[in-house]
Image (cartoon, rainbow, N blue to C red; front, side, top):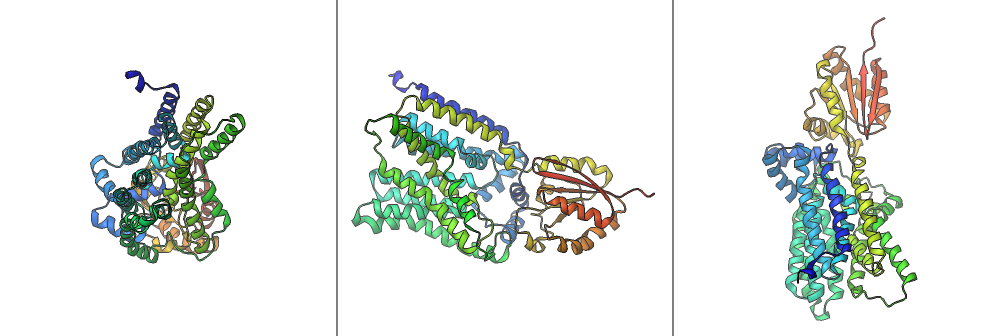
Length: 486
């Protein structure tokens, strides 16, 4: 009897690949915080009232993730690894859920292969190693998808109610999960019995609709009062639409599985034994719905800062779709070990290269702390948001959050990415008084964006000072110093 449960070579290869990638991801937990992470951690380090006011003034609405993290950070502290640890736990729970969904339709080795695909997907790796709500959102979406899968297999309104409940929880975590409702609702309408269509639709829609209705006033308030995510009324362009639809959703793994399927068709003339084509087409519809919806909305409204992160609900069906496609390809015995080894290697390499997704603020601010004896003011260039509206955020702790989280000695000033003609009066108003107050002390200028070189050179030119700098990862440090008197 024990031999029945013994892992086969293919299954062991999947587990080895997952383990190798997870090991690399665990090391990535100690990477420097990104701007978004440091902003969240700074806000959540405030008392409850202050955190709520900061979120409603400058940031998206509070969510279940932020509420959880407000408690978590007080229990474990704000180090990089501990702040990101919940995301890894949510990721592992998501893998278990993905396995159960795939296992309901596929063999054990193919379900494990689907989990390997999920682990090797670059954007999922970013979510799993980032102190942001996306991984928790995907977990709740996965639990909702699991209930939808049970309904598709067995029917029953109870499963649809459960699917709607988990989706509502996901929407309260990140409102962009609402696009999963656009995925499921049409499928529930067409895939169920005709006489049960209305009842099924109400069962799956009512709780997520309530969640959206509760969030909507906060979204409207946010759009009116916070300019970081705002409507520019300028079309974003079809290139942005292409980026949303093709790059993050249909990943290399999906296209690789399709290629393997075509090879199978060429090399194997036997009839396909795959029995889940109805659910396969449902996954294909779901994988496309979210990026198409977000891409069209971005293109039509010009909403600023809609990115692949906000297509969070579409990653799960895309991963399952890749798993189902790979399952058909692995009917060839030689294909399964090849795909496992390929995904394990590529996934581990992707996880190891994640620093490209981060900003190395920690190292930059270590330099700032080392310069504390010089009493040099630290100027932090704020990047990543709609900077033409920067004046509405001057003085906000969120803009200075990387320096505050890493305990940089003050005074600290956030430098906007204004056009050059607007920067000159800003320098006269803000930099010169700071220089006059501190005498001829040098200035340390820290930035993420390469374009900041022009800003640093302009500051040096306006002051008549010298300048030198270094660059590492995506961060630059400029040392602006008074020239010696001749």
